[in-house]
Amino acid sequence: MNHFVSPSSVTYSRWTNPGRRGEVDLTGHSDESQSTDTEICTITSPRITRSAPGHDATDTEETFTVEAALDAIGFGIFQWKMSLITGLSWVADAMEMMILSILGPELHCEWRLPSYQTALITSVVFVGMGLSSSAWGNLSDKYGRKTGLFICMSWTLYYGVLSAFTPVYGWLLVLRGLVGFGIGGAPQAVTLYSEFLPAKARGICIMLIASFWAIGAMFEVLLALWIMPILGWRWLLGLSTLPMVLFLCFCFWLPESPRFDVLMGRRDKAEATLRSIAKQNGTVMPRGTLIVHKQKNRGRIRDLFSPQYCRTTLLLWFIWFANAFCYYGVILLTTEMFQAGDSCGATQGAKIEPSCSLECKYLTSADYKDLLWTTLAEFPGLLVIIFAIEYLGRKKSMALCFLMFSLFLLPLYACIGRTALTISIFIARAFIAGGYQVVFVYTPEVFPTENRALAMGIASTMARVGALITPFIAQVMLRSSVNLTLALYCGCSVLAGVASLLLPIETLGRGLQESSVNQEATGQTTAMTSEGSQSSKTV
Image (cartoon, rainbow, N blue to C red; front, side):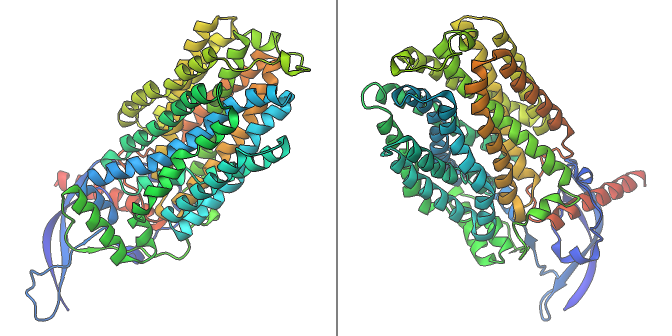
């Protein structure tokens, strides 16, 4: 093979030459050194071109990455289809979560349950989610995102339908715990979706998926408003599984992530997927050969604690914990305070456990309507955050959401009336819902493909720990002290806002990394190129 050198102008924003990976020392890098430099650098350097014997020297071998291909193909019809189908799994997840705030008060009266048993109905779901989230992530990193998502949705559908036929309290706990075990894999929908998106559209598009969560929560309240007075909670549990049925019917159309295929060494399959996307979007693929980063060691927990990711991992775990603790807390607080009538009545009217069902307060039509209003708060929250993440960045957007959430919980310390209570909870929920979705954008962006699903899974586990604790705060502690309950939520939110600002990496404008080696090389190459650019300017 003949080699010759010719000058060329190279413009890039990421490292795309894996062939020279062995020539670079990549050890000793921490996550602080990986901050994103979104400056596009252009330098003039020699270009090594290879030509086969018997061919003209101008015949060059071109290569491209999955990231470059998706950026070239752009956002189009394929991504819209992906949005709708993966969005169905998000709707199903939201409905299973929203039903917890409706099921608890109903069974509290119908089965004459004390408050701690009512809280267990909610907590057991989060126990199942916490136990399974990392397992679903590991499964998705080893066998594919589509495989993991299909199995978890099938599992959730099966036990969701069975829980509608539960005869006694004990069986309800077991079956709802198994439902939670399945829901623990729902965040893999975001992992799969994010790996098909061009870099420029990723933040806004993942926030678009978040709107399906808000739709699911709203639909569950409307379904409860219609079903509960006529058919009861068993029919509500059964009908709430319909989005999962639709997802499983359409998910066979979903392709496997080309990024996952690349790590598996399946170049032909990844290229076929990219060609299909380009055809559906009416665009063309980049010319050349797709670069493959085949890796055998995928989905290892210890990789999350390497010098590159240790600080990021620990901070994100707390942020996920705080998000779930505050988000599900404000949902449960809504029904508890609406039943009491105002923020003071939550304590004054509930210090003594009801001894018979006649002393219980079922949710009324007015309660469901106010619950619907607070659920609608997620839509304006998402609209604000969609613009914030593109202008302020991911870190500052998360910090802003936590700060505003704690700020609008403060009026609940006063004995405000029903209208003021609804408005305060509306705004607080808008911000915490937006912040929850920002962390869903940030997490898959900051971790590489080789352990992205595992990172999402374990982070989701930490969120489930927060969600597991929050029923005992919002449904049990609230009956003893409203002020202490609100102080816990406000304090946790403020600490999470500080943790957001301490994250070492801002992912705005940053491409998804295929592997940790690729990520380290990106930082080195960008730094080297910036130096070269400065030198050329000086000359």
